[in-house]
Length: 252
Image (cartoon, rainbow, N blue to C red; front, side, top):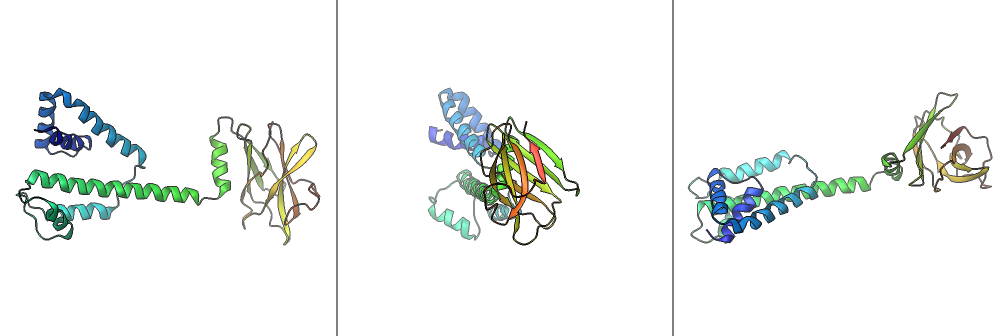
């Protein structure tokens, strides 16, 4: 056995895809050529790297069916019946291709398809995350911080507001439930009250059931008070609160 042939077996071994016969050949060759241990180690490291870079997801049912269809048209004696995919592989193969070599090429095709599907799923997941609202992403970042903290305020109307913050990230997010629907031309405005100085943190609106997830636009400091007032749709025209706050949450 040549070192190149052993490298092929090492790749199949790393993928746990060798037949009983080829697994025996792999182990026998490794015992006879201990200097090839590095080849087997490299193959295992490569497979582990590919697995770590692609999210583990079950392959789609159609993939299994497609691969079984291809396997079904390959007879155990190495002969192949009509199939577009099979024909393209056979056309590239030498006339004296042995059954074992054919099985390796079919396995390589299957492994490539699985890898591409995994990469596609990972890309789809990445795009999905990129399309999520910024407030939701910010909330997850804050809640995952080592110094994450939260506090909840209950309103007389029964509405609820929970502030999540992280001083190390200088971020704060307010999540509300049951806030009343405002009149046209009005909006809720967030404030950071630092000492006696209110700093506007942006405006937000709620959904029909009074729910909202709003990020405070300004970097927060430890000890700031998070407040909410009702202002004009674009925010307070003076840059200061024009109404009494309906929500007040201290971050100390």
